[in-house]
Image 1 (cartoon, protein in one colour):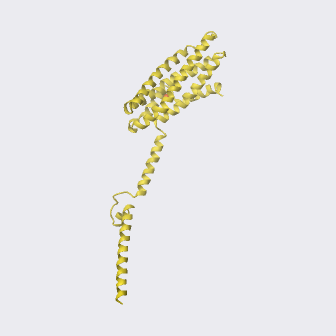
Image 2 (image 1 turned 135 degrees about the vertical axis):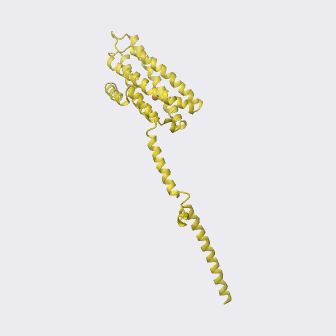
Image 3 (image 1 turned 90 degrees about the vertical axis):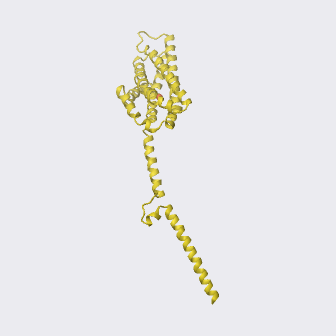
Length: 249
Ligand SMILES: [Fe+2]
């Protein structure tokens, strides 16, 4: 009888111990989930993990949306149009080199595109707004690339200006002039492509990684003002489409 009584006492003690541990574990889990404070009628000091995760996801969603409007994305979109214009100019040079009639009107249009939009709008976005910020915020290597980009821009401007001389040749071009035209275009195209490669592989990533978003807040507005003052990407996209119809397969 006494043995049975002892067993009952031990069982009760053990049960009480497990119940206590169980309560402590549940309180701990409740605290983790933010429920303990609510259960006690207090305002939760920390948000529930799921709420925090939700907020993080929302912020990520906002950031992703902003990424679609980054200044570097605007410049990459410019490059799509620039590349199309470069291909037209290269195709014109190929025809001139092999002796076809000089396409003065189309040559004038594509050179106007290069001078009035690529040089006067797109490259000003890069060299007057983005480039200086990268040079200041990023490392020395990035600053050196900014310098090389500006040197390339000067050479591109000089070569484009030289090609203007061929807009409306009075007489048919001599073989030497055809060769000179083609060589000048090739030099121009090479520099345009080199510049875009440096920008997309080095300058833009350096900007996205080093220039604070706050510093870039008004860049898109400044880009829009540059386009409004000269000409827009949309305007030239229509023109380049017409040229591409004539010159690209
Ligand atoms: Fe560019």
